[in-house]
Image (cartoon, one colour):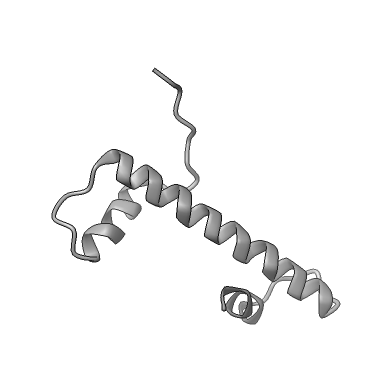
Length: 71
């Protein structure tokens, strides 16, 4: 059995997101996959937000940077 990588995003909130989307039940593997994908997307947005802030001459990431990076 392969060791599992721990996720930054806890399973309970991930499961609730999927359930709120209309699922009746959610498997552990589905929660792991969803968590991994959400983390990848969040890291991309974070990287883009850092780039935007640096371009603006700032070290601090602002709400607008996140919103712009998410587009």
